Each structure stands twice: as structure tokens, then as C-alpha cells.
Image (cartoon, rainbow, N blue to C red; front, side, top):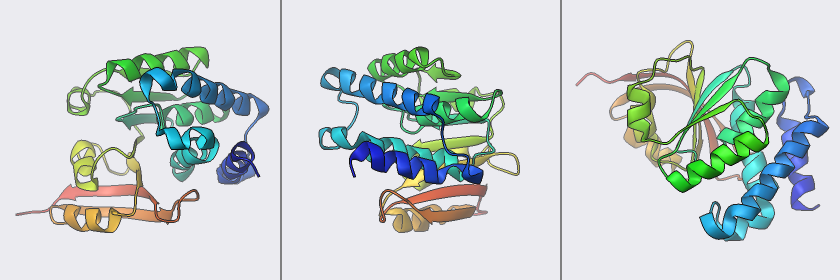
Length: 219
């Protein structure tokens, strides 16, 4: 099975209630793939060795974030980079909800240009913030149901970013690697956390972490 077929099978299997994805969504994902490959020589958007495995290593991998909390309509994606998972979330939301928005925070101006190009080409409900995460979230006054991040920073740092927001009406959905057990131990030295972990469908050493509750420990 080639990467696209395998990736599509994975994405279809993740969708809630057996909904699957439409031909229009598959087409949008294909355009996104083509734009990544077009911009790759100048931008180095993804690791070169994964370029021919985009459907599994990046598209399906990112779709797990949306699938972990599909009821969220207003997302904030931190450290968006090449748009994994933020743009994938926006593409999937375009099919399932008329009322949604994905905010993407990226400090690298060249990557911001790429993100805005993809969002425009695919007519996505996306706002790209060209600034630091601390600055954007420090000034935040809009709705947010879920935060996302993939290969960004330690779990402790992620907790620091989202602590003012996490609660009954807002969660964090984070893609973490094989070091997560150590990261969790470090984070729980100063945070009380309520979370669910599930093994990644694309990498048995990775986890999808759903953070449902967060508060600083008393010192």
C-alpha cells in the first residue's frame, strides 16, 4: 500500500461516528500536499526523508489531533510551522462544521507566508498570528475550545502556555513523543493534571495527550 492510500485509510478510520471524509476533503488534503512539496526547497517545511510519506507521517498523524476532540470548533494551534496539525484541523472542520475557526501562532515570517497561502488556496477559516505564543495568548480575548501542538516543546512548557484557559470548556490536545513519560514526571512537579493518553496510530512510540484539567501545585 502506498503512503497516500495508507494515510487515507488511517484518516477515514479516525473520523467520529464512522463519518469518513468526502472527496472534497481528500482533494483539499491533496492540494496541501502539493503546496508543501512546492515550497519545500525554499522553506524546508518538513524533514526531507518524510516528504514522500506526507499522507501518513504528517496528514494522518495530524488528523489524530482533531479526532481526539472533534466537538471543538474554536482551536488555537501553537507553533504551527508547516501547518501540522493546524491546517489539517481546519480542513477537517470545513467538512463537519459551518461555525468554526482555527487560530495558528507562528513566529517565523516565511512559514507564516506559507500558512496564509494554503489557507487562502483552500478557503479555510484560519487566522495566522505572526508573533510569539506568549504574546498572542497574553492578549487573548476570543473563544477557544481546544489548544493543539505537535513537536513544539516540553509538556511542562505547554502547560505554562495554556494554564489560564484549561478547564471544563477548554482542553489541550498535544502530540508527544517517546520522552513523554519523563516530560510528564517533570511537569507534575509543579502542575496538577487531568489527562488521557492514547497511542498514536502512526507511531507506536508516540502519544496523543488530551489535557482536561490543569492547575499549579501549591508550594
